Length: 151
Image 1: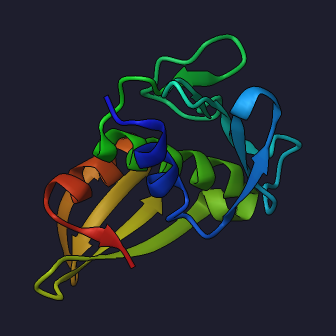
Image 2: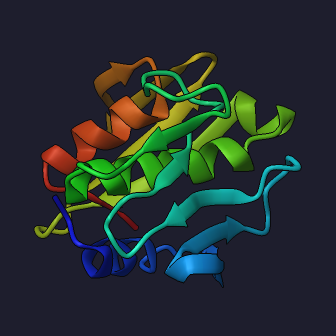
């Protein structure tokens, strides 16, 4: 299990999130540019390591009735994946849902492109299709496991 400090360090790597301290030493991270009323991406991250990430608009995550996923036992990769996916889901609007594009790069300066086309998430190496996924989270997880990071 990651410590509170390790989780903070990972979440603070997302410049689009704004840290908000709440009661009992807990911290929220908000996505101010959300196209929805929902702004909290990370909810009640507690010094004991417990906390939640909003995944109410995502497939592939076991969320509660409020759309929150408990991240107590998440690895670094799992935490990065769900936070990335949560931000993307709150960024999507009808125009963005038609087409969404991100570039991912590895240590050898190889670039892969993640592109949302219709209901699928496709990964391209130049013009060659490298993989097709059902959700952003699945595609991001694949890219991270292959050693790529968002550019």
